[in-house]
Length: 249
Image (tube, rainbow, N blue to C red):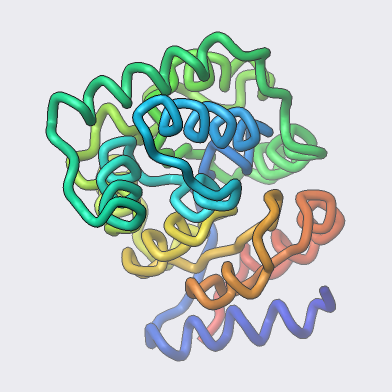
């Protein structure tokens, strides 16, 4: 992406919000942004739902990525069986999916994201995680996998939210918890529901397409910028930081 395109997107955001922008923090989604865990989530969801008589397409977990487990379960039953799911059944599905996910091999880091996070940190930008995941084996690994650049007290997870993505609650909670203003933060997401959540919270949002979805899905969800890969994000790191650490009108 050319620098001019990025500046145009940022200026459009500022004009719409009628405010200046000065980057102080980046809010990162976790699954599909920091960890290459979405194939594992998808496999676990598909296997779990099939055991409860629900066959879903391979792309569905990616479309619902970032939401809470209960949101996903309820949505899939409504969509593919035309009914709501009992609370007891939903809880059994949630636990079964969690257990399947925990039994799978550990997810690796998304390509070049440790390097990108380090670059961000060395430029004085704060790092927060905003995830719909409750998978403790991933959450607990973040600080280790990312060389100490993510602190547990700088995270909003499924354990803390009541509604979850695509509702703006997670990102509004992150703003409140961090003390940053909307014009001091940008979001890096990879899922349409996550993009919708961040945009509903009034945040400038970059999407990286690390799954099987058409990039247009992320753009249509409201992303200000869409990069085709995490590598493309890394290649544009200097453009991002050079332009996001100055003020615009």
